[in-house]
Image: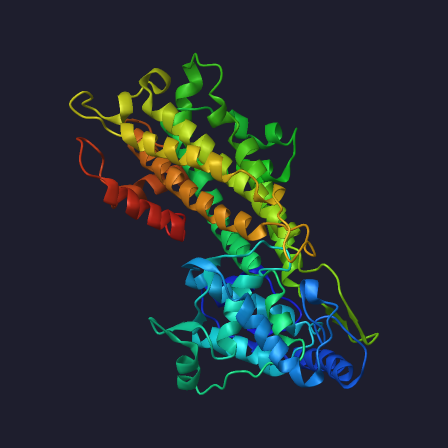
Length: 494
């Protein structure tokens, strides 16, 4: 991939998960050189410019001698690399490298080409900085995590390379690379940014696309297992309240239910309405989809943004301190998506109850043909309920919190990193809940004598290829784990 002024979510996925290599576009190199020339001019002059020849944060009023500008940038990196906690997952770090390089390549940060090239070299070699997960408040960007990333560029810290964690200097030498000697503005440009938040949110959005489609499939399977009505999913019905997500979800449900024989059982059915968890799927899942689409739009803007400080404006030869590093757009989006995905789990757990409760389903209790001696899928619903309740705690919005830093210079922070990290936890919990519903839905179809809709029937056969019908109690957690893995990877959908 050629890194220029545009980066899409699909580009992000091809590089971060597909290991596509990245190189700088010639135009990007020119933008970088032009911005760097502005910084060099300031270094040669006498004007005080924040981050170039002054201290940082509360020390912004302290001027720094020209001979110490490189030391200033190195000191910034080593002093800020004080994150804690478990290392970030590899794909998150790959995303951070890509997004940091992309932002710098836009030509408003004032770094040299060598800085961006080294970021891309590490990414292409899959030599990844070891970055602790905790320490960002999402205000001047993700300072501590990005400092750990930058640390490896100057030969400090650790890199994970070919399965081993080793001192960065050793890995750089093995790759034939020389550690950077940072020059004016470069350390600050490397650590002021939203790339941890951006990487976490982007990965969550990619996974949420799969999760939502799996939830739609699970809902369709439950509708068939419950012999529910298809009428609420009609286009002319949903179009009377035409939220885009609802229309899209209803269309997908109709596709899964097409050709159903089970729906014919409604010809002489005395049931007037289904429970909300069945008939309101387009409205509930659709609302989640609308939030997901909003997150995609936010990321599209973020991927085309310069998020460090100060900003270099080559057109006017200015260096301006602003607030582009603040994580609020990502924090609010992550919190909203967190709630939206949790709702997928909440309604899915209720559909599991519909299937397992004989008073509601008309099916054998807990979907076991020999209840009493066997418990069937009873405790699968317990697990779903536990995860749904855990998500209620995780959904408390991180973005409503703020705590002052840097002696009150940074007096309002976004907590965007917290929002994006707990979003990942909610996402993983909901993948499990949806997998439990698919397990219950497949079992419920084993009691039906009529054929399910085309998509549901295909999914049922796919699940039964590795999860046998539960005729008697057995240890089936490994089967649930495999089902979840296939749902998570998108292979069940495909």
